[in-house]
Length: 573
Image 1 (cartoon, rainbow, N blue to C red):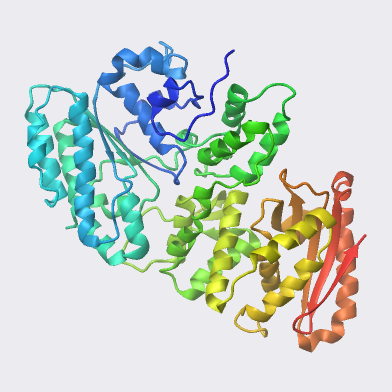
Image 2 (cartoon, rainbow, N blue to C red):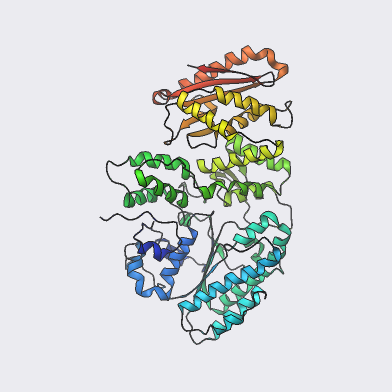
């Protein structure tokens, strides 16, 4: 069987097929979507989760202009089997509106930028279908009200003798409003309120749904903030974001990941497939969007970027994180910014210290009331920065989905502490710490730099300083590396250890580390010997509970900080 190419990071379904790239088949969702009682749908997923490619696939299936290409495009996939093809195949005029990239820097320019996106969509519509007169498009004033603009064009299309219905696709319906929500909530409320132009725009869409011109509607986005703000004006659509049936409609399940690797780069003897997937699972897997399934989803852009690098020489790349993802730590700041300092700090503390946070899930955002901690945690979830671990009644337990996202949180925390204290972490020193851990199996530099940071960074005051704060400093120094998986509160057979540092496949060293931290206030210095004795016994219990294969390369440490900034560290055998 001829090998497929690793797919490029494209959202064009036809282009993917034409270049003989492997397409992870999502066409089996088509009959399921059609069987729903709702023809107007919203589907939310984080950025880079394959939403645009999903829309492109649906457009090529339903668009009449792609009828002659059907066998070429879909022949080898589920929907291409005659038994699975539906009666709606290639039966629609497709109108595609893409609202990503709308200018939001100046509030007065947003409407014009929005209209230019709508105009672009209609120009493509007229290019695809020769049944319509497009001359009036040149008279469009981009400063007009979007609802009036849309009403004029759809009315003209409806008056045309061609009666074929429209399938309307909207990609990133909320992209520009999410940006506004982050830094200009006043203007956000103005444009999506009852009299706002965004709501009026969707009211026009609803009007032409009622007339039958728009027969089906599918919109993607990231959050329900805009959706919920315009509910009363557009209450005909179904949000299928949390449906178990559509949980895997974007992103890759582990079975799909294995199929992708086998179809593109795998050959016996070239690499250990199980070992590669095991590593990828830690870095890129873990997203769960429905409380009714246990399946966890891989981020497809991260997967494809990794496989593209790995396939060159079948070795793990030095950088396991896509550079486009690393800047997302700013989203955490934007989401937490509207909260009080106490609520913001509480979220960060729970997520980073405990690895889990329990909250509700905001389904509908109401801007008549204050923005709450639940609202913020829910937005972290919608953006893929947290994911569902378990649900008890209405309480959701959220966790960080994978190691890439964990690194984002620690990057956010590091920048936060730098800004608060007018202090910059020494990146060269931090790299030197990692090298010593990996190649020499020592913690001397780690402890020394942690002492230095303690003298500069304030956790309000040392009277309130605790082992939890100490662990936050150590994790900040350790968590931004590709060389180790650094886990806080890692479970052993004898309890939860403060920090577990385990090599990744990029690490050429032979050393892993288990660290138990203790902090003794100045007033309790006399307890040092007792704390040391108890700590050694505790670390020995952790060590003895681990399997023999882990112990071969494992260094187990007790690190005690006392008398403000003094330190003692002991390797426990």
